[in-house]
Image (cartoon, rainbow, N blue to C red):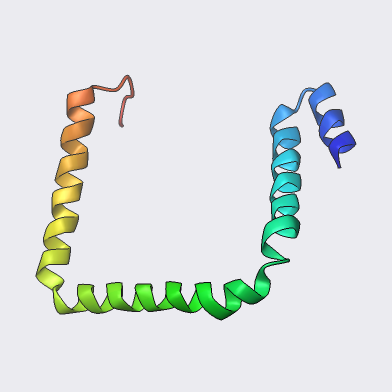
Amino acid sequence: MVMIALLFYITGSPGKGNFIILMLLIYTLYSLLIEKNDCQVSGKTWPAVQNLYARFLNWTLDRPYKVVGLTIALLIGSVMLTALRNPKVVFS
């Protein structure tokens, strides 16, 4: 796999080489960390994540005006921050 990435680098396509190395690193992390701890993740961690997400959804459904207001505030805030920062980008 690394040889294929090296071949892409040599031929002048570093983007493909970077992508292959990234996929290799993700697979390595998966095989070392996630695959061996699958029982713990499926038994304890994943239900906790689901419960947290369910509580978040219940909170948002109980307060629709706050959620819409926060969304609009984030939109306005991000536009203001972009205007203050004055990026060297032309939006057209």
